[in-house]
Length: 72
Image (cartoon, rainbow, N blue to C red):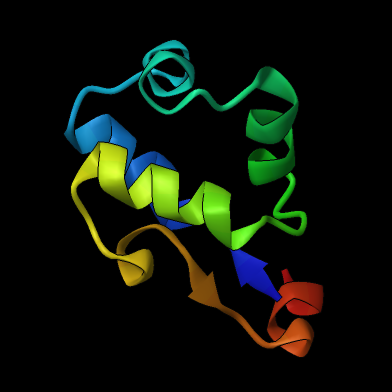
């Protein structure tokens, strides 16, 4: 599973709120909800996030095997 836990850390470090992210990237609140729930995300959206936060994909997302998620 791809998880976006790192996204929130990067946003906090850069002092970027979800409101600012929506304004900077044109990402709607439904997409923010989907990011929080680690749901599927279009590469177009990931590109917008990386551009707005000046970071790489690995800085905001990571792969975690499903069995590791189930252990939590």
